[in-house]
Amino acid sequence: MKITSQMVKELRDKTNAGMMDCKKALGETEGDMEKAIDFLRQKGLAVARKRAGRSTSEGVIQTYIHAGGKLGVMVEVNCETDFVAKTDDFQNFSREVAMHVAAMNPIAVRREDIPEDQVAREAEIYKKQAMDSGKPENIAEKMVTGKLDKFFAEVSLMEQKFVKNPDLSIHDLLNDLIAKMGENITIKRFARFQVGTDA
Image (cartoon, rainbow, N blue to C red; front, side, top):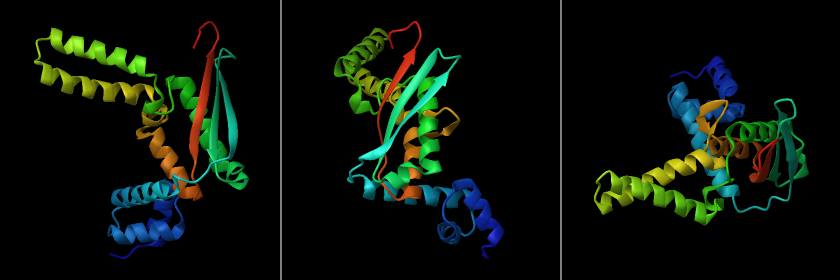
């Protein structure tokens, strides 16, 4: 199938990937736009894995204030170089993450960062629910694992669905940015403040 410049432009508009990457993706997928998008995302994951061990000592502290000053978020996003930290793409990503934290109220960046006592408490509740519904213990254990995964997806920032596009998680957005920037990028921490609450 002939890959036209119009197809390349359309894929580029949808993914922000480079011209040659778009052309290659369309070639690999015989012009199938959806498969080409998946191809580019998988390539992005590979780039992200390669960069994962590299030090991220540059970056920004981004803020987002909402609801007439009643809700605010600070988020630290790190990268390898000051050059990347100053790019519009990096700044926009950091702003989007801060806005997402304001809207979705995660409790930790990654599931591993959630306090163990909180995870144990959730697991105990899920197990009791399963046992009370008459499930045998081995089935109850599986149900607990499934419910804990759902809990992590709801409260861990990296696993949450992006508030502006539920087809993507924050982790997907981060991997796309890493692929585009060619640097390791990490969301280090965040703080969310709301007037009248402790959290």
